Amino acid sequence: MVKILVTGASGQIGSELTLELRKRYGNENVIAAFHNKKAPEELIVSGPYEYIDVTRKIDLERVIKKYDINVIYHLAAILSARGENDPQLTWNVNVNGLINVLEAAREYDVNRVFWPSSIAVFGPETPKYNAPQETIMIPRTIYGITKVTGELLINYYFNRYGLDVRCLRYPGIISSMTPPGGGSTDYAVEMFYFAITKKHYVCFVKEDTTLPMMYMPDCIKAAIMLMEADPIKIKHRVYNVSAMSFSAGQLAAEIRKYIPDFKCEFKPDFRQEIVSTWPISVDDSIARQEWGWKPDYDLPTMVKDMIEKVGRKIQR
Image (tube, rainbow, N blue to C red; front, side):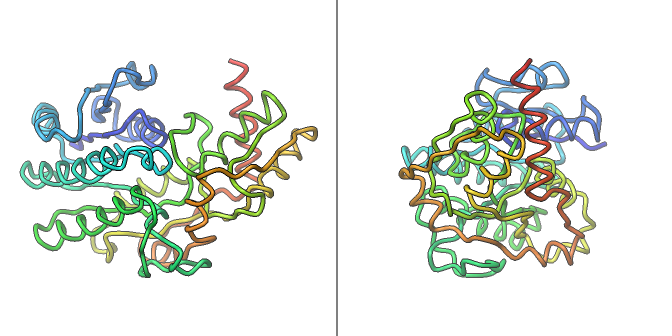
């Protein structure tokens, strides 16, 4: 029997991934873990949940023992833009929290752990186009530094202890369900809400800022595909994944196909400096070759779906 713990279950990825895992494995077999009581109602009523602080290993041990957890999706983290405001907290949550998860998983014989990395591991020295899976990684943010550290840690725990940890290096994630959570690619979500409600948005990056992106359904699909893949196929602990690359201006133009009077101004702030260090596209050919990764959404299909879903959400 699979018993899954999802940390950071109220976050952008966690809130939707938890619901999908419950559909797949049964509500009672997926335990949602929150840091505070601002949890989505749907997650609370649809299955078991716990309040934990990942920086306290004792919290993790309590939940693992209580539910006999054998799979962990560890998503609790401080994101890039918010992280720059408190580097020490970001290190504590992102690195010490991960170490606690890995140690608890090792000590209590958890079969498999998923942990998301990010294109934030890259820096100006990384190739701008088709950034390779193995390349120069000198990030300029504390968030990126914690992600590089995490990648090294999961490789260490696999090589030293045989712990089956699997990781996706995500691009920017776009979601119709959860509001932005402090990431530097939040403009790609905010733009939809402002376009529908105000028909005007002030974007915090330049019009020609181009980044690799992924729609949430593909984000969830990739995580589950990787975790369900036969261990024989998994030759790496960390995989680049991507779906599309587009500029902020291209996104605004695509939205205008549905909301013709939408106006978007571009006034870069401190987050422009962060995203300027990231690649325009990444090479995810290894993920495609080893475990069959293939996205379902491109820019036009993503925008169409987002307009419909965000519109319904706002009406409700």
